[in-house]
Length: 377
Image (cartoon, one colour):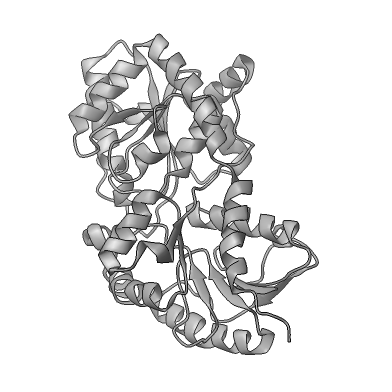
């Protein structure tokens, strides 16, 4: 079987959620299926870390697709020429974008439809593209993969598509996330918070990640509990320029909030493992990989009670209303002051984390792609 794959989001030291999804899934299906050929389409010269095997050919297509106008060129013209040249059985697109000009079967991963529900959160030119093209992608796809049962039903309802055309496959999380011994926790806390305990947030600084309300909640928490010295560490970068620009930090807490920017996976795993409480309260999320990372690291979790988050968190999280800063603050206080609840959520999280595996994700993704294997004549 020959599988063409959109790997344009594999960019060394710059990968966010969908980039990591692409890496974890594509690497595994290439390695576990040496009998197949894979054509990986990049929009820039790839790093050597993306050499997944001798059966995976890297092809660089121009132009670099980082703007809606360039998306149209890359997917409808560059991809079309490459498909004609390499003649794959199927085109797999982990970021959901498809070509409207090719005739072979196409399988996208549509992670979520946040732009349909919260259009105000996106820059206008991206919003216009998404609203116009994703219904078309859903229509021309031969099958759709998504990352949660919530997203599966949302896609079916929003685009009037049969549920039979959509398969939900949960994400995994890297095995680098695991509980840390106390001495390592102390070293990480010294590095980031001068030895103080901390709440941790991880995610792109995008409006739907709800960092503004989280910081409001943290401010309330500190004002109402002046003796509590827990700080807040924020890991992530702006998804778009100034996408986090509406966040206001009051003078009394600015020294207690630490923005790290983008971190390597190794450094992130240490920061996660040393956290006292992980707080992840998006108001819209297709899956939420950081929740699983926190579970694997043995860190108790506070998360939102909307969209896919209860599906992922199960009984291993304390839930709050992401639209209510007071409620987020109450849950921060509740968990920070209850070591028994912390231990209970930690133990539940370590057990629940076993349900999420990139190996299983890759196996089920390949299962769908293999439906489009051409019979040899």
